[in-house]
Each structure stands twice: as C-alpha cells, then as structure tokens.
Length: 394
Length: 136
Image (cartoon, rainbow over all chains, first blue to last red):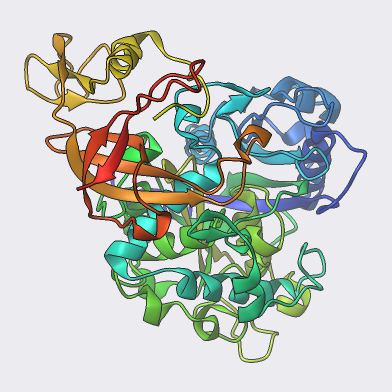
C-alpha cells in the first residue's frame, strides 16, 4: 500500500484531562475513567458513540490499590464497546490498532486512555525485583530500574557522539521554561537553571535526578475517528497527516546507539513518507521524554540533526519558549506530568486547536501558530515507537 | 563476582548459570550458522535452526558501556553504592551484562579491552557467580 493513501484520513477529535500531579486518595482506575469521560465529552460525542476502548500498558497496582483492566474502565464508563483492549507491556500497538479499526470501518470512534496513581502510590519502575526477590536475571548484576537501561545507552552516546550533561541540561531547562507557562504542570512554579540541574544528585551516572521524569497521579485520553466524521464534531479536526510504527525488541543491553534501523528512525521515516515531508516541514516537536537523553536521541533519529551535532543543535534558545523549533511545550513528562505518549500527543493536539493559554504558540511573544507538529511515543527502552505528524484540518 | 540477588533463571538459560558456577562463560553456538546467542533460546535468532551446542567463550571483549549506580534501588544495596554495571561486547558475540572488577568507576571507559574474571570469595554463598570483567 502506498502510505500517502492513509494521510489525513484519520483525526484526533477530543482530549481528556484530569486533576494531575499529586492527587492522593484516588484509584488508578478513577483516572482512566475520568480522562476517558472527559475526552468523549470534549469530542462532542455520547458514550454510546464509542466502539473501541484501548488502555495503555498494564501496571501492577501500587499503594494498596486494585488491578485496573479494560473491563474495569468500560464498566465504570457504562459502555459496551465493539472491542476493548489493554497492552501488557509497552509495545505501543494502540496507534495501529486504532487506525486499523477506523480504516476497516469496524469502529467509528476509538478512545485511547492512560491513568495511574503512580505518585501517591510511589511506583518505582523497578520490575527486576518483587518483594526483594529477583523476577529475572538482571537483578543478579544489580541492573535495576528502567532509568538504568536508558542511562547505559546515554553513556555510550557520550563516548560516541560527544554528548552528555551539558546537552541534557539544555533539554531539562528548556522544558522547565515551558512548564513555567503551564499552570497544570508539576513544575509550574519551580524555575530551573544550570546550577539547579548540576546540583541534582546522580541516580545512575551519567543520569542525574533531573534527567528523569517524575511520576504523576492523573490520566489522559484522546478520541480518534475518521477525518470525515471529525469535521462534523465541535473541535477543529486534528488530522494525522503521517504516522509510523516500529519495534526494536532486543534486550536493552543489546541495543546500540548507532542503529540506522532504531524504532524511532524507522517509524519517523514512515511518517515523513506518508506526509510527503522532511524535518524541515515540522514547526514543533512534542516528544516522549522519559529521560532528557530520549529527547536528544529521538530528534537525532528523526533527522533534525546528524549524530555528533547535538552539542551545537540542542540549545534552550532553539527548543525553549520563543525558539525556532519548540520542543515539549507543556513542559513534557520531565516537567509537566507523565502520561506515557499521551502527554506529548495531547499537547500537540491542544496547540493545533489553539487551547494552550499562556504557552499557546502564535500568542506567546516571539512564536508563530504552528501548522505541523511532530509527536512521538516510545515504549520499553527504545524498543517500540510511534511517530505522528499532526495538522489542523479545515 | 557474587551476584547482588539470586537470579530467577529461565529454564533455557540453566547451562549458562551452571557454567558461571564452574567459572566458564558458556553460550549456545548455532550448529547451522555458527551464531553465538544470548539470551538463551530454543531457536537461533539468526537462522531459526533448532540445533545448537553450549560452548565456552574465551572471555575477551570490549566494554560497550557502563553506568555507576549512585542510588540504591533496594535497601540491601545501600552498602554496595556506588557500583558499576557494564555491557560487554564479547569477541565474536554475544553482548552481555557484567560487573567490573579491579577498577575505580572513574577509570572505566567505553571501548576498553576487557577479559572475564571470576571471584573465589565464598562470603556470600547464597548468591551465584556472575561474570565480571577487568580492563586489560
């Protein structure tokens, strides 16, 4: 199939938010349900219009909470969709799942949702141990946490491409400057400068605490539908001009930084091809930023700069407020809140809809209203990837 | 060196861990294409052949990357901090996780030539042996 046939045929019609940050006393399920309900209302739909409900990956419950399943969320929304699903791991199949359902006509309106009480429940992302016992063979080496896997590749990139904390601090600080314009961002009132970044403690060197995204309570959801149907709904349709999907499922310790077929490289190539675009056509990037280095590696894999150029290319002046290529304008997961790929994608949609308040591009001094926004979603440790090129439809 | 935790060993990988207890680095060598694989599997990820033999590796390689844990992700590791976890590209493959012996963290660098070393210390005998490497 010629990928361009799929361009601008599907759209995001609504976004759902919840209270976020530190929101104690709530179940993870409640955030899923509230986010999904708000997305359905935002899209101008009735709950009975929803014929597919897709949950992001499953996590074990924390803080005495109970397990969340797609059954739970559908039940509490009072819906009986054609299909309901939930990923077990971060394989990031939601996008192609939704597109397939819409393209075949099996479904008309798909809700994709994520929620967690990760902050109040103190989720650790250390899956190598359970109650102090190893769940696999990685714990034998002391290789604990998702953070450590990303840090391992970041260390290699320092060696191979002359990157490092001097580059990553630009990402952390630029995103913090965006968060300072976003009242719902976790770091809204916290200014960050060079000294603040470098004084943060090392967690797994070369990563400091501020290279990592904090956990959040809350949820986020989007509604996907066909472009044709979206034109009849209240919000301006946000068209999926290009999308791509790829996986690189090797164990993280076997991944290499100089991989021309990394999941991000392959997925973005598909998206650019579908849209008939190159990085030069992109006005804004909203990128999955579990760690600062993830932003760097994604921009490089997408072709915004060549390997080895990040030290010159990534500056707060370029990617921060007023810069020529705004990146993660909500503050991103690093400084706004962590809702997996729905943090960057929701922000891309909201910017194109013109609903971003003080940080709205085109309103904020020194910025222009974007036509085209590149979003990314990343799963595992660079092991699965979605790219989306979004544009506002007429 | 002794492992930080007793690993939960998948059945396919038992000969690897048995090799470690004998201070030998053993991997499956594909009988059809010669590919040396890790993680352990019933088929070769290069050619899908089911024929293989566990063979000892010479234990030399190049340090691909490493991290220095400065925070204990479990209370039992607080006394170990800081400790290093490395990724080693063994000559002829495969790539494995490993500890590093005999060097301070600031002396370790990517691209270093390394060779496997085993620790005879029996002080933590509930734990199993894991491969560690020293810079050559």
